[in-house]
Length: 232
Image (cartoon, rainbow, N blue to C red; front, side, top):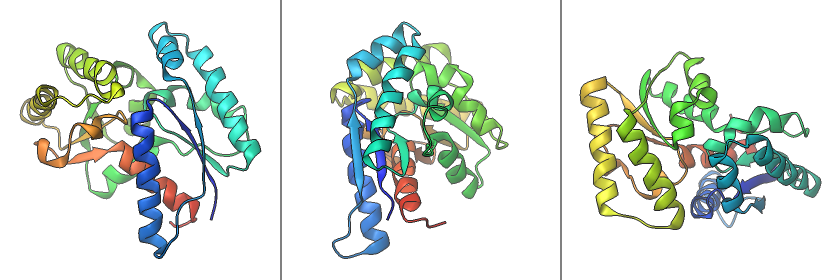
C-alpha cells in the first residue's frame, strides 16, 4: 500500500471528510481491519484565504510547496490537495518535488465521462467558477462547462467562505443552492452538477439536487484510495 500525503486545512471541515472517505474506500477494497496509510499536513486556512483574496497566489504556492516537500520527506508516495481552488497552483507545485499530485479535476472528469456526461454545471468558489485553471482540464476532455450567473456566483461563494468553511450548515443556503442547480438544468441544459468545492458536499446531498451530483471530495478521496493500491 502506498502512503497518501494529504495537504489539508482548506478548510479543516472538509479535510475530516477526506480522512473518513479514504479509509471507508480502503475498507471496502480490502476488508477486515484495513485502513489507509496517510500523512496529513494541515495549513492555516486564514493565511491561505488572505492570499486568495489579495491574488497573492505565489505566496500560497510557497506554503503548499513547503507542505508537500515535508510530506515527501516523511514518506508520502503522492500528494492529495484537499481543495479544488488550490489546484490553481498545482502545476507550480509539481515542479518543486518529485512525487505526483493526484489532480482533483482529472479524476472528476474521469467520473463524469464514465457516466457519459458531457455538459456539466460547476459550483465552487468564485475562483474555480470564473477562472480557467479548473475548467480547462474538463474542456480538454471534451466537456462543456456551465457557470452560474454573476449573482449566483456571488451567492455560492459567500456561503462557502462565510458558512461552510466555519462549519455552518444553513437550510436557507441549501434551498438557494438547490434553486441554482434547478435553474442550470432548466435554462442551461446541464446534465449534471459538479460540487467543485470540497465543502459543498457538507450542504448538498443528491436528494437536494435536480441534477446528478458529482461530489469532488468523494471522487478525489476514492481515487486516492485506488491510487494507494495501484488499482485501475
